[in-house]
Amino acid sequence: MKVTVTVNGEPVTADVEDRMLLVHYVRDVAGLTATNIGCDTTSCGSCTVLLDGESVKSCTILAAQADGSEVVTVEGLAGADGELHPMQSAFRAEHGLQCGFCTPGMVMAAVSLLRENPAPTEEQVRCGLEGNLCRCTGYHNIVRAVLAAAGAGPVDSGPVEPGPVESGPVESGPVEAGTGVAR
Ligand code: FES
Ligand code: FES
Image (tube, rainbow, N blue to C red; front, top):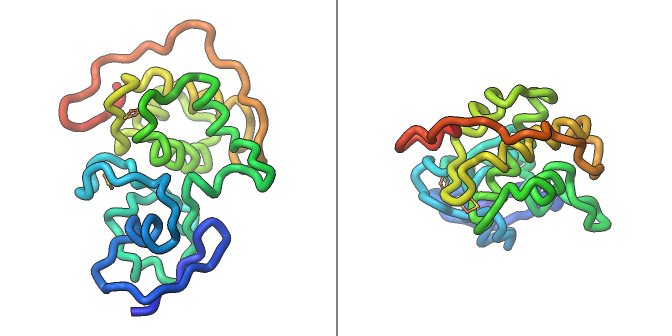
């Protein structure tokens, strides 16, 4: 079937199989491979994109379901001049990544979180990102990054330097086995 999805502001039209997932459309049709596939079973969040402004796991949606919609991937966050989005700057400044596999999805989920709640508490950040797994960071620096980005102001206002975060380490408990809840 013929599908048109606007990806990062550019309409992308293709004849695709009915069963094609949105994540495959983004990666294989639009050619934007920063969005990763970690599980294909709605578990890891590495495929998170914005669909009409809402964060979704793009392995859970058919490309056909996104026909006529707008998708933003992590490649679409930076400014036209390449200046990083505040969330990307915050992840870099706070060392919110190690191997980077989860990072595109984590950043998109975090952007969505701050759009819904521009000034979250640490607990709200941890709950808001519970659908996104990271096997490297222990979540501490990811949470710090999101709080730093929140301190930088509205996330839609364009790239700015992140604000300061608490000087002490962010306290947190163990990650719940099997859930990825960043506690
Ligand atoms: S690849 Fe989509 S949730 Fe893991
Ligand atoms: S930085 Fe490696 S999985 Fe998150």
